Length: 379
Image (cartoon, rainbow, N blue to C red; front, side, top):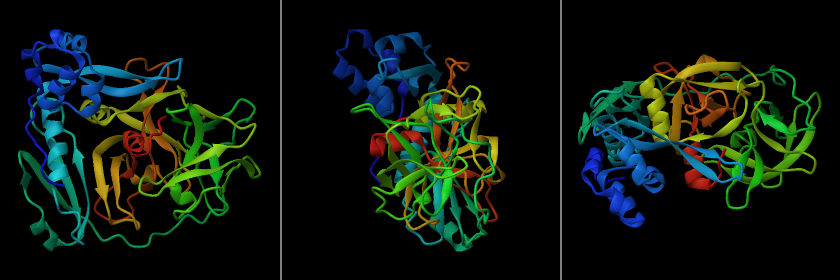
């Protein structure tokens, strides 16, 4: 952490001669004004020209085309809101408090449209830790919340999931159905893709398998029995994600079982999630234990080192703890594609845990954009 420039003035792009710039200079100009790397790399001069002077274009999502290539979903947002959000992200990177034992986690809460109102939220487990956390980082306020130290929680002792029956596997296997390792069960995510070669993988939470050396272990579909549908290719404990290579005759689907719409078109970017929060739009999920639930986004860009043995970055906080239970791990949260809501959904991220301590109330897991940035896999 440290050293990030927190000056963002993205609306100044309207003072630049973007239509006469070469591509490299255009990207460098956007990056220099404070645009995120993804937006800077995928926006065009036409996108800038289409925005009013108090707005800027951003890339809110990535969707798959018929050829398998990913295409950006673009929209315009208020420039002051975007500058405030980008400044809060930079301030969060510069906030050096997570190493303190009594600091549980930190995250960015994007503001509503209309001025500078994003903030950094820090959870501490001891009152004296408040003195370790500054009231502001640059121009971004920091809210400190006291929570009780996490203790071992009661675990769900049911022998198996209570959700709906698995679909027929003849046409492929969608997300939101029950899967298991040799020891634990969870929820299957919709298909993940390796864009480098187009390979499709099954995915769920890494902690369904546990540990770090799970390569080759079987993944089972709980379809009234235990059908082996694949074996682990890679596990990513820091993201709590595991991907499994499909066995012959079993195909992962870009779908949510019983979702309406159920087709998965792609995924949200970080600013896309912030935009949903600013608009008050909910996320939803389907897990094999608690079924279908909805909830609002609380924070993005989360970092926690307190719960579990490994520090986790790129965490998305949303909903309420009542919307998640053991067995839902590996499910994803999603929202209808803002450009074409009847066609399908974009994934926000994985659902891997919930609060079980007094003082906070949310579900959390690794955002899809972070999985892509770190491991190259996409929805």
